[in-house]
Image (tube, rainbow, N blue to C red; front, side, top):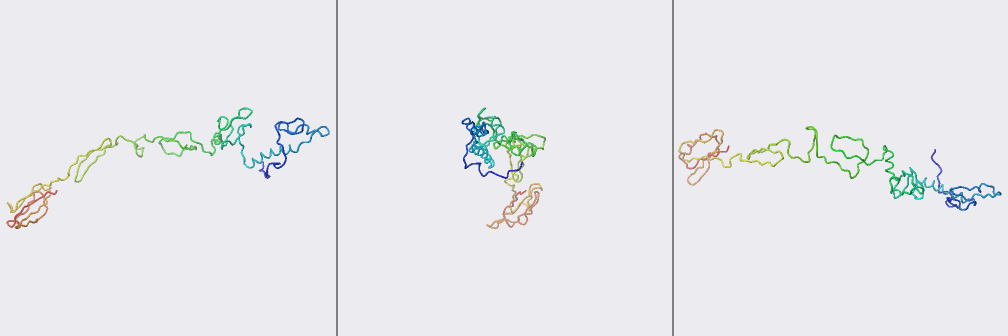
Length: 295
């Protein structure tokens, strides 16, 4: 059927005289039309035989009523629900700022059911369209629960997630060793015990697995009070032999007194067991020879 090219500028006889046909003829034999009988038989008989000519107002009323519906529809109008009409699937009406689809016959001859009061008679148009075509492009709310952790996948479901949906807590993992990544929400202890070792001037060590605090007993790597050797000048002999084995290291110097003045001279480093020559200080000065262990 070709698309119409002639449109109604207004309903027929909108500004003329018309009578909307009643359901039944108001007075039998008066020649007026009704929805139940249309034009009565007397409008077909010749006037000399008692016939009555059809009324112009009736013609205008019939054409006005039909063209008013057509004019409303060509303007994109939808039908508003009327409790006095009969409805059958798949009728669609506007009611309460929403479109409704009829899924079960109702009306004045059976049961008058207002849209939104009984879902067995009327359903929201959007829900109706979703129910009759599962492959349409209208998205639907998902009816499946959110998945737990697993292998990433695009998925095939076309439904959308509701705004109040919830995912299960992702706190438990399973599988072979090395198959999981990330951090667990909670843990009682480390799988591998770790050693903590302190080095440098303070030493100590301890083990830690996360199940309890780690307390490390420490000690100084170097004695806080170094070992000191000393001797008098003039010396008892011409040399001073440092104690300790050759692995020890000593810093030595001579604290000398000339009259009332003191000075530190002849400083140096030597290994344990070394002999320090003191003959230069005999008999010219008085003082003390010091040797301090530094390693």
